[in-house]
Image (cartoon, rainbow, N blue to C red; front, side, top):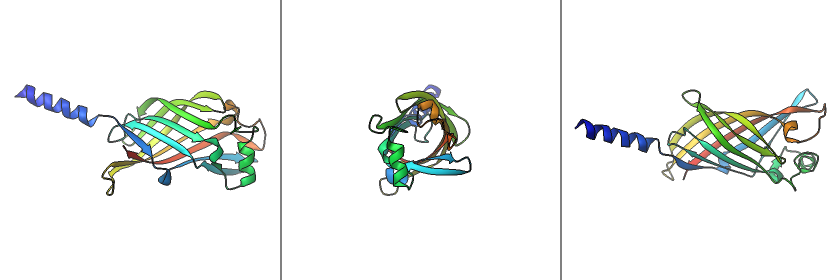
Length: 186
């Protein structure tokens, strides 16, 4: 009897820890950034075309992320600035059409918080980056009857380390990332 109970409990814990694929919902997600301008203000923007996939448990733990962002989709609410950011002076979107991230590590830091480390590739350069994460919640969507998770990822990257833009006093070196995600279990 004890052996049967132990086997049942073990199998149940394996089922709870099973990994599944999650996809970002572009209509309810945003990949945003902010950078200091003239050392007195902050310019914000976002990328409107991206694909974010994760493999995680039903409670969105032990997550592994794969991110693909289209550099041509940069939007700072200023067309002239956006064209300049797409040019060879910054992202060189023609030669480097994507920014990618592939996670290499996950660390639970609290009840709903975690750190995810991975390789960020931008402008032809790959460097390790760590992002702070928060799971805002996991629910069953009433229409699809599938799990949905709300997440927020934040972090900072030094644009000069990736060769994005030159060393100039008009722009800060540090870029603040804020990624708000609604992800649907597949």
